[in-house]
Amino acid sequence: MPTPSIHANPAARQAAYRARLAEARRKELEAKGMPPLPAVATMPGNERWQALVRQASHLLQTVQDEMQDYYDERSPAWCESERGVAFQDRLEAVQEAQGIIEDLINN
Image (cartoon, rainbow, N blue to C red; front, side):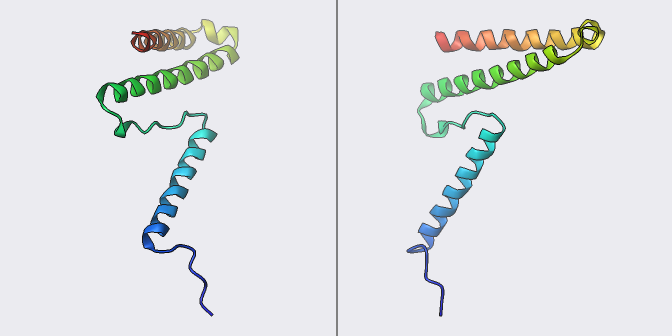
C-alpha cells in the first residue's frame, strides 16, 4: 500500500521545504543571539538602506556588549597589560562606530 501524499503537488512540497529551511536558519541565528535578518531585498532604496543601517547598529551593539563582557571578566593585570590596552582601544573604536551609526539612524 503506497504512502499517502502529504503535499498536493511538487510546488507545495518545495514551498514546505523552503519554509523549513527558513525556520531552521531563524532558530540558528536566535541560538547565536543574532537578530533575525530583515527582508531588505524587497524594500525600496531609502527604506532598504535604513533597514541595513539599523541591522548594522544592532550587530555593532552585540559586538560592543560581548567585548565589554570579555574585558570585564579579565584580571586587572591583564587589563593594564599591552594586550589589555590594545583590546580597550579596539573596544573604543567599536563604541565610536556605534555612535556614528546611531547618528545616521536619528537623522
